[in-house]
Length: 302
Image (cartoon, rainbow, N blue to C red; front, side):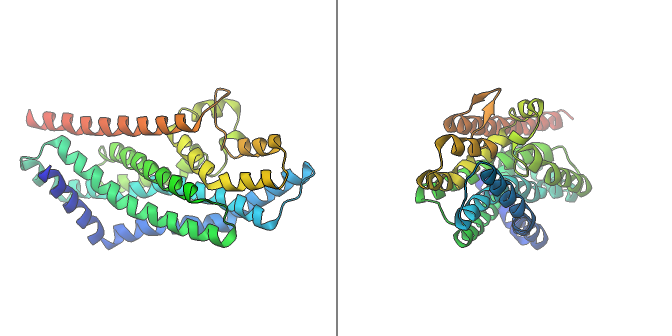
């Protein structure tokens, strides 16, 4: 454990020492917040208002802003927890290119422990960025429309923590096979461009075709997005009920933004979403440690 803690401290210090790596990770969620509030908020506002108007309901600007803000914030956090992890995990690749990883393998530290050290240090670094992004998002909601309780905020912190663990584990498995900064940049670009669509952040899964919905329901990230949506927007839906919105209308709205998530027509409970997300994290971490261990054995036979 002493060797593991030393590895974590070493990797974390190097991450924060590299200003370029740290700043690029930090500004990613800030840029997303600006882009989302500039472009996506109007889309969310217009779609929500038009749907209610067609159904014969009116909604106050405060509730509308709370609805759009909750959807925007959950989308941002769902994406940034994953994309920031890929930025924070670049140290593992840079250690390969600089030869530092080869120096570390000469020490008595096992390959599996070495990989776990990279994972934990990346998790710490990414959590700092993700929780900072959450704080900014909560500040944004307090300005545009606050409908959260203390319980909602605590659950949002839990969701961000689990999604960050998932993103770190995913990036660790992917980045292990990369050996140059160019490869890392290409993978990061692909993840940044595509992940928001497949996790339902940019567009709810319910808006996709039935076949694509079935495919995406197998991806753990979609359940993470749904958890964030549920906890960021729970207060808004409660307020709708208080203002006299029929229960079936509220449920239809929840369906439209993936707060109610369905697996082949069966509604997935919140507890099941947590189990899927936690199970995926354990599988990915186990796979990552196994990859490192097998790589160590292969290197030992040479």
